[in-house]
Length: 128
Picture 1 (cartoon, rainbow, N blue to C red):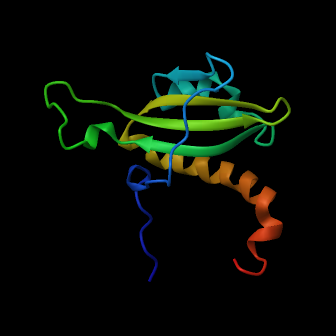
Picture 2 (picture 1 turned 120 degrees about the horizontal axis):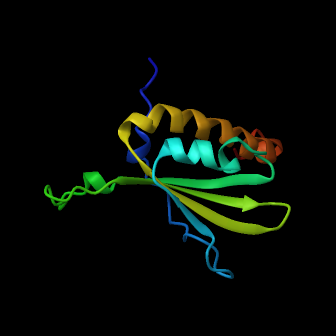
Picture 3 (picture 1 turned 90 degrees about the vertical axis):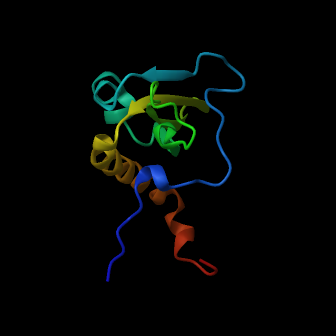
């Protein structure tokens, strides 16, 4: 029997990734919604090899136990890219809702295929 995959906000990655770029300021861009992100940036629709998504984190701020009900927080999707041609690290923060999860999951799965292609020769080898 197949197990239902965890919600993206339930996945806790080991360690963390700092937003932006240590060597240059201004490399973290904010988007007010998933729809705006998909319409206004080539990170969404552009070349997956050039703009390699190396990490994502769904920050479930709205689910924090000490959340103020009078001032609800919004969840945030953090995306971390390496622009490989320029050896450049940058990040994106997107205000996200639970309703966005299917579209986000589909896009992340597509991006994961690029990362998989990079590591594929080692994934099926000894010790894996």
